[in-house]
Image (cartoon, rainbow, N blue to C red; front, side):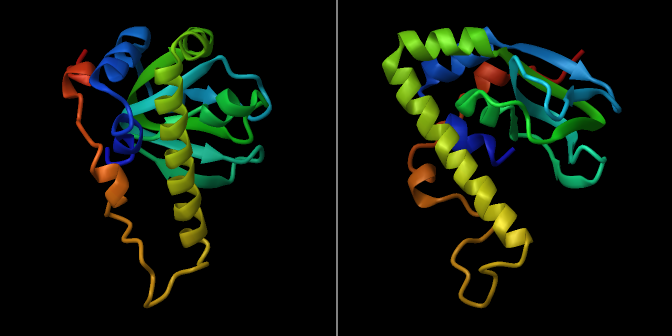
Length: 171
């Protein structure tokens, strides 16, 4: 769940409460297709529990993601269709936020928008660093980033709003 700290650590408690209230928690069974390559997406997903396979159009697995990951953020930022598919590989709990609702909030609350977009930028930066590391670039004895360590700037702002997502994974 560490990666969700990149997002929630940039938001206020009120922001996190809004996200939790604006979204709906759903249980998605193994085999469900959350995102289809090239098909416009109307939701943003936060994985609360479980495992999602990110796949190419031909079904090659690019990554296996879990709790704390966000899906659909790229299509929110640039409005292009998804560049990969997302298939549930283990029963999962997700927080699903309709993009129209999120966009309305982003347009009407500049403080929230600033914090949210900063959080997405930090999240995407971390995802890119992880991807580059998996490809073998930049890895070596002098590697500065420990995969299990939060950026100190993010760590300073982390204030886990557990009540907002509390009880997410119960039937």
